[in-house]
Length: 105
Image (cartoon, rainbow, N blue to C red; front, side, top):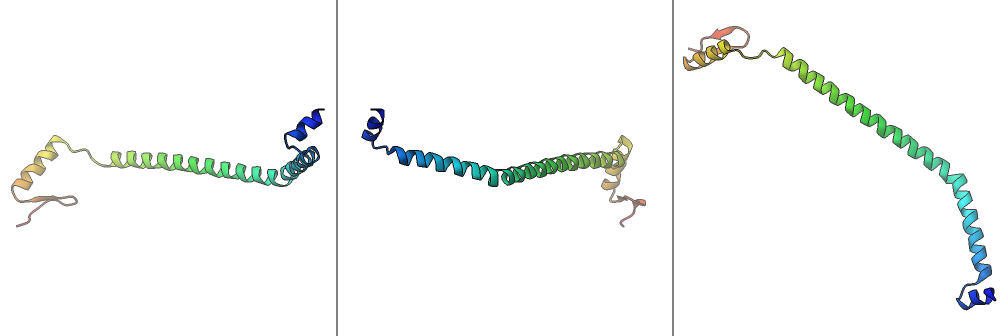
């Protein structure tokens, strides 16, 4: 009686069973053949991404440290040096970074 009801809906029971068996066999084969290499490839990709992110963080830290060192090496202008630079530029002479005040005239 139930089988007759399924046939009335247009479902062919032997074809349905054959399709379920085929799908199960295909699923098992794909899991055996493709799942392992696919997961291995995704794990390797995950590791490469993690390494790249770590390298980027290390590069940022190195840049920050280089900037800190550059700021420490650069002398901060004092009031005296600012006043001297202003006086020398108004008098027509410029300060040379290595030899002190040089005359341009």
